[in-house]
Figure (cartoon, one colour):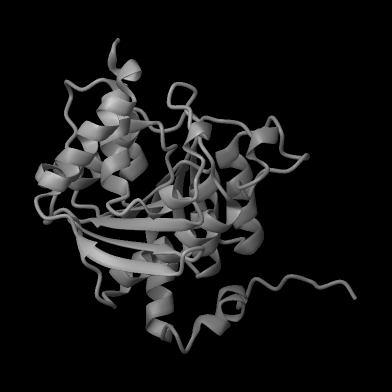
Length: 294
C-alpha cells in the first residue's frame, strides 16, 4: 500500500526512535542546529546523512566536484545515476528525502576566500569533509571558523580506522597543532597534516604505502572507515551541541582501528612542536623529498 506523507508531525514521528538517547528538548535543539560541511565526498557525504538521520535540521554544504566511477567504493552519493552530477546538489537531495523540512544551503563552487563568510554564517559547528590533499581549503575553513567562534571537527579515514580531533575556539588552533603557515608549499602542508592527523599511524602496519600518490592526490580509502568517521564525528557534534559527554579538544585526539582492535585517546603535547612530531615530519620529508623541490 502506498504511504502518503503527512508533514503535520513528520519530524516527531521520523526521529522518535532517537528519544531515550536524546530527550524531547534536546531533539528540538538538534532540529534548530546549523552544521557546515565543506566536501560531500567520502566522509563529508556520510557525515551529512548521519546527522540528517539524527535530526539536524539545517546544513550548509559545499563541493565543486562531480561524481565519477572512482568514487563508487566509498562515497555515499555515488552511483551510476549520479555520475557527472554535482556532489553537493546530489547529497542535498538525499537529505530532503530523509527530512523534507531540512534546510540545505548548497555552495556549488566549494569554499573560497570569497564565500567562506557566507558559508559559515549562522553555523553552530563545522565538520571537515574536505579532500585529504586540499590543505589550503582546510586552513581557510578551520582558521575562519576559529575567528567566528565556531568549533570544527575533523575525522580522517586511515586504513580501516579513524582519527578524530576537535578544534574549539579557546583551545589549540589548527595551524599550531599541525604546524602550518602561509610560507609552506602545498606538499609541505600535506606532510604536516599527515603527521598531525595520525599521531599513532596504526594503519601503516598493513597499508601498502606504494599506492599513495601525493602528486595525484590519491590514496587507499574504504567505505567502512568513512562510516566509522561519520559515527565518531557525528557523536562529537551532537555532544558539543547538547553539551554532553567528555569531549577534549586539540591537542587531544582519539583513534580507533577495528582491524587491529586498537583504541587510543591521548594528546600531542605542544602540537607540531612536540619532539616526536618534529622527528616524524623529518622522516617524511626525507621519504618524500622529491615533492618538496618546487
